[in-house]
Length: 114
Length: 116
Image 1 (cartoon, each protein chain N blue to C red):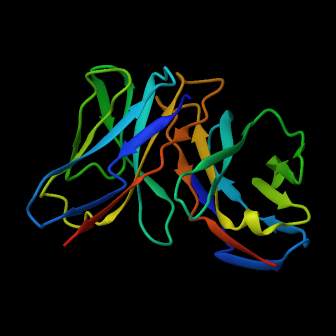
Image 2: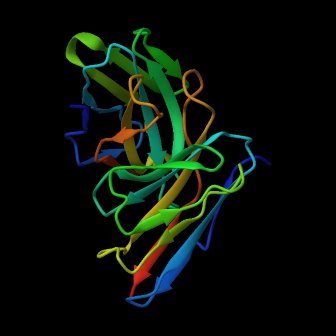
């Protein structure tokens, strides 16, 4: 089955620690995205990548980092510089721009900072 | 500036009622795309529909229908004969052709609760 997997589903972190969220897709999509969702709010874009070895900051990139070494993988690191990291994180992917540009989402990772 | 507004924070209906979720958008682009996603309690966003700015035809898919009106910058979503399984948060989103990406701008979502 084609799709997007995210792990872990739940993640707990102590303040001051970096954590990495995994996102893998087997849809052969070129573009991948990371969004953050806070209670009662829509999704906000953290980072996106349209091609391997290239990525761009979204609207709220401060305190986060990413890499895109493989087409199917786009891990997100939440660093200790992120002041309020507790949130629900969603990864998405899509074909290249233009037609059929709908994004497909993974199941999400819920991060809690203790 | 681009923006998506979903003014209805929460809607409660009884099964079999029809319900309409409103979405109003702002954009300066002439070419753009509009989307609806469903987020059930599990958290994963499920793609429902995509519309481009040149296609104002309304669409029906089973109990779901969408009404796109450029004149009022609206893209409303109607569920006919609602069911308990329709309970979820629904997001409307916009992407613009002029951006060098398919960045989605989301509304804040409408939580729909369907009671038996």
